Amino acid sequence: MNQVIFVAGGAGFVGANLVPRLLDEGAVVVVADNFCRGLRQALPAHERLHVIDVDLADRTATARAFEQSAALGRLHEVWHLAANSDIPAGVEDSDVDFKDTFRTTFELLRAMRAHGVKHFHFASSSAVYGDLGSQPLHEGLGPLLPISNYGAMKLASEAQASAAAESFLSRVNLFRFPNVVGVPATHGVILDFINKLARTPDNLDVLGDGTQQKAYLHVSDLVKAMLMVRNRRTDHKVELVNIGPTDEGITVRRIAEMVVARVAPAAALSFGQGNKGWVGDVPKFTYLTDKMQAYGWQPSLSSVGAVERAIDEIARQQGY
Image (tube, rainbow, N blue to C red):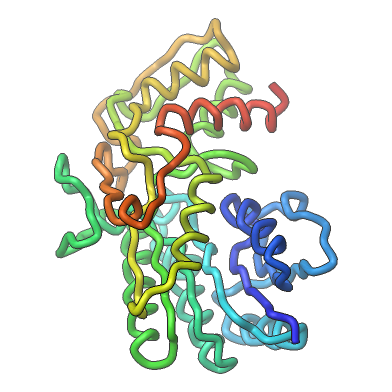
């Protein structure tokens, strides 16, 4: 019987990079996406790939998607990559994150229990830590006090998955990663800057004063890390890992300068006030990945290298 892998939000940025790797393993892959940001054209044409247009926050629709998937073979695992990725939108309307980030988790786990699916892999975020200033962020920190609805619903999703592991799941992987860059870009600071320059090629407006400093990971390194954890033998039902670069990150000012140099060298930079780009923004953090390094994983690119590569990739994607 065919092994079926269900990828929620699989047409999004991370999913489009993960799905080809799963297909290489020989499995049947079902991508379930509502295409609010996902791109059908980002997915490969493959006889073992099946795409379902579905709102995974809807219980009936999710149940139907699982039934369709179960008809293709034995449902083995679920990758949950679906979420609202627009943090400011979630600040303005908390229903956005409740529905697209948490409710999707709740309904996926409910459907998994009904179909006896035992393996759950969740794309979480550094946003669950909140704003801890210069304190290094590691997996043992607590209490966790996120400052955005996005981070709050990611943390609630982690808790829901942990509870499910106690009652019916045999393996839960919780991946906390920082800013991930690359293509096909659907959002993020690099795409935002390039789109702004397309509208005003002589000037780039930057949210905040540019001192915001964060870690950036290229999506190719992220996918390798997630698959390593998923394939690793362990006695732990719940595995929680930070995935990110080993450096202290790069400032928004430097990213803006690099984008301008690549896309519109004559453009001037205009900065805002304060060290936050929006409500819920964590202006600076240091991300520790000692656990992943102990497992033998190292990113191939630093934050600067990841941003540099992603700027060129996204610029080409946008026709530059």
